[in-house]
Amino acid sequence: MTSPELVPLLPVQGRILDAQLHLLDRQVLDHDGVPVTTVDDLELSGPALGEEIPQGTPAPVLDALLTGPVLGTRIFGGRPPSSRLIRIHWKDVADVGVVVRLGVGGEGLDASWVERWVRDKIIARIPGGRHDPR
Amino acid sequence: MILGDLLGLPVLDSDGGRLGKAADIRFVLDGAPHQLMSDARMLGIVVSPHSAASFLGYERTNLTQPWPLAHLLRWRHRGSFLVLWEDIALIRKDAVKLRPGFTRYSPALEDLGRGR
Image (cartoon, rainbow over the protein chains, first blue to last red):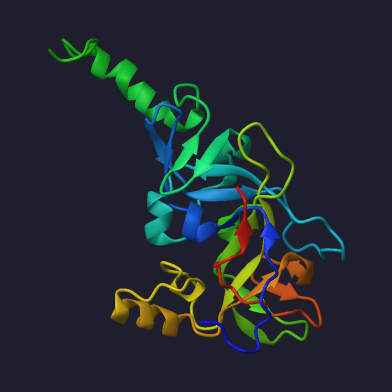
């Protein structure tokens, strides 16, 4: 697996996460195990594009998981403008495994506003739509 | 910065020679601790000379099953290496440039992370 000319990386203190392998496209569940969204992209604290990175600059950290209307851009390329992407702050993430678990409830997150809107404006107006089926 | 802008960018050495593409970004959870998880610090970029994307990460693990898939994907990502954040000189819209004398680290994931 490893070519002989590659230098083995010294073990690091802390769990390793590769963005594509462990984070992107994973389902996000809230603290009750209710699905919230999927991880469409990630936001880093830096660096600015096109600016020289001076030696000794601290490494950027993961600021937020991003989700949003990415179906069109996945098919045709590009990405939605940053302002259209919805952020789930990294400090709200409780665990990363097969799914990404949050330590907060999904009800208050911007990421689930479409579901809430459909529930309140459409489903609730259908007769019987305000209570559990019996 | 949005990570999707970085993935798939060509990675160049200090002389402008093409080394491959940014197939993945590696993080390590050793930043400032929060109530739930520590900050995820960017450790480096996994560079793949033959492919812009990474699929299932066979080239970074010791998995060998299913055999045809494992061999095909490992071959597709042959020559992959990790460059650390310290060796990145510049991230442009169209390329990532490394510092002179950068080190090619093994992208293997096994036995790297300790503790959670």
